[in-house]
Image: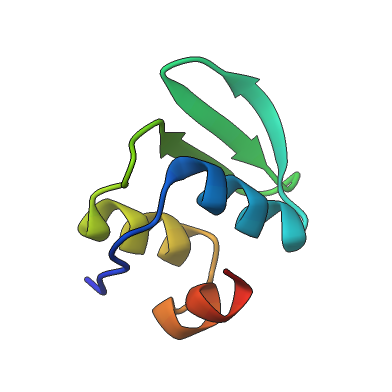
Length: 70
């Protein structure tokens, strides 16, 4: 699984909003959806690199594409 180190949850939310995801609800985790796929983002500063890699993969992004959007 690819690693994406050093990303805070607020950076991740802004990045996913750029590609069409919207916040559905917030609590200990932020739930985002684009109408097809749902992402669960933990409120961590920073998010575990392996977890961030898995979230980006769920959004059909490679680590390089995700880093470009940051």
